[in-house]
View 1 (cartoon, rainbow, N blue to C red):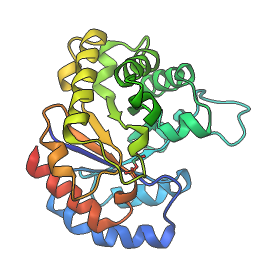
View 2: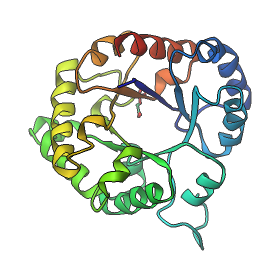
View 3: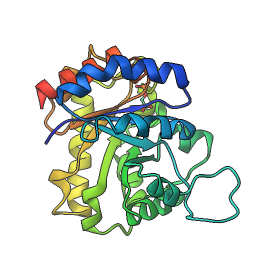
Length: 253
Ligand code: PGA
C-alpha cells in the first residue's frame, strides 16, 4: 500500500505563507514521488485548489471538518455538499480537538461520516485515547468504541473511501510520540477490529498514525506493518519538513 502523508494545518497559515509553502514544496510534487494531502482552513481551500491544478495527481486538498447536514439554518457551518461542489478531495472527521473543544460526540460523528461518504467524499476518521485512558489501560476499549460508534451502519463498499487515523491525544502537539511498538499494537488492534466491521476491506483500509510525527521519527513508525501513513500537524506547516516526511515515508513503503 502506498504511504499516505496528510498535513493538518489546523488554524494556521496565511495567504503569503501558503504561497511560500508551495514554492518550497514544488520540487517534491514535481518529482511525482508521492501524493501530498493537505487540509487548510476552509477559507484557504480555493487557494490550495488553484495549486492542485498544477499537480492534479500529486496534491489532494481536504477540509478539517464539515457539518452533519447538507443544507439549512446552520450559521457558521460548512456543508459536505459544498465541499463536493468545490471538488474537495477529503475531509478529516473526529479529530480529538473537535471532540474536546466542540463536544463532538461519536454519535454526531457517525452522522457526519455517513453523510460525507454518501456524498462521495473521502473521509479520514480519527480515533485516540487520552493520557488518563492509557494509564488506566483503556486504550484498546476506547479505540474499539470510537470505531464502533463512528462507523456504525457504514456499508463495506464505502470503506474504499475511508482512512482511519490513530492519534493518541497525549501525543498531539506535545512532542511526545507513541513508540513504534506502542503505535503498532494499536494499529494492529484497529486492523483486527476493522476485519469484524468490514471483512473484505480491513487489509486495504489505510491506518495513519498521528501525534508529533516529524522527520526524525517517521522512518521507525513507517516500518511497522500496520502503519500506512501519517496525519501531521506541526511538522506539516514547514514545506521542508513536510517534503522530508513524504520522501522518508516513500522509501519505507
Ligand atoms: P501534531 O498534530 O503533529 O502537531 O502532533 C497531529 C494532529 O493533530 O493531527
